Length: 386
Ligand SMILES: Cc1cc2nc3c(=O)[nH]c(=O)nc-3n(C[C@H](O)[C@H](O)[C@H](O)COP(=O)(O)OP(=O)(O)OC[C@H]3O[C@@H](n4cnc5c(N)ncnc54)[C@H](O)[C@@H]3O)c2cc1C
Image 1 (tube, rainbow, N blue to C red):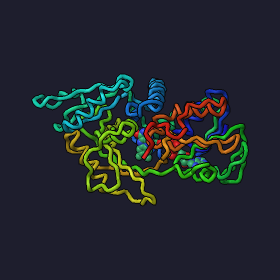
Image 2 (image 1 turned 90 degrees about the vertical axis):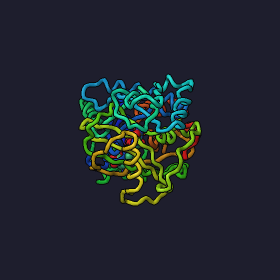
Image 3 (image 1 turned 180 degrees about the vertical axis):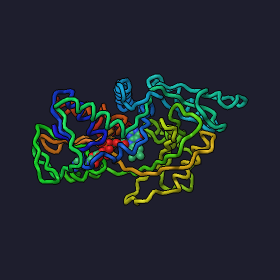
Image 4 (image 1 turned 120 degrees about the horizontal axis):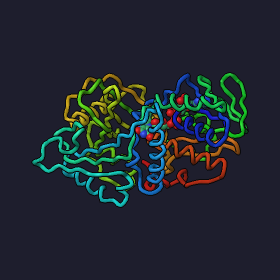
């Protein structure tokens, strides 16, 4: 098996192929993969999947991530997650969600504070601001240190002689059962998988319907160390509204912020082991994207984070942006055979990391047995993306 791409998808496909008896050579254009995977804060919110197939796949993926969390040295933490409501309207929205028949599958429990109850009554061990009136807790969700995870998984695969990682080599051309790299060398295999992430130029001209893909630019920031302890990622209700679940159920959005224009802001704060806070994220669809980091939406994010946590946030130390692709016709991700031996996999938007183990298993089911769950068919997300 030849694999192009050293991000989360290329890496999980390599693991899945090894488990099924293939020998694998994985090529990565950069010396170290620093693309979308490494840029994600890694808060995997399986509990916010759209009902139906996406939720089913997310529950399966969550179980796979939990198995990985049990492995010595794996940078995966089973922390669960919180969504915090800051007014009664949002608290009602959370309460309504908690009455859904799939609430148990999502690992949800709701805590609502009555007006007279003191701060801290919501979640004893999590620092939350006075403005928070209800929290939706899920014990399904996990946090991953994505850059370390790629290293960990490659290290694990390198213990077998059937795996080879080739960093700093870009695949420039494809033939039946072959990759040609930037030095002109041709590599042969029985099957080839392309997992190139946002830089899908190599294969995009070969797709049947490239127009169903669009790019999303995401911005994130990190602060210095926070004294208080956040035991789990904390999101605002906007993060739920813009999730698969929010889109599929038509959840009402919070009032628009005139400072944001077309940019979407959905807050998730994750405390890293160093105590630093990663705060995401802003989303833009309007191409061409600038190369600069836009300060205004990041400022809105910081304000929301300060209000939700009820503390003065430490100074910002890092800001960065990353890009992903999504399918606009409701496929959960893109899988397309380019010929009888080559398959392109990717464009999973903001579920690429969460679903990576399941996407890899599905690709291998498809290329070896022709089995197909329907996740890569238009409309699979039950709502259409947008
Ligand atoms: C800021 C941010 C936050 C996110 N948050 C979440 C989240 O909370 N949950 C979630 O599930 N997802 C999240 N995502 C999305 C997730 O990161 C992506 O869906 C996922 O990482 C895509 O993985 P990938 O392996 O397809 O692509 P990438 O991580 O982009 O990796 C592709 C790799 O392929 C290499 N490559 C490209 N072309 C070639 C070639 N021709 N030859 C060799 N190598 C090549 C590239 O150098 C790159 O390293 C987020 C993304 C960003 C940017």
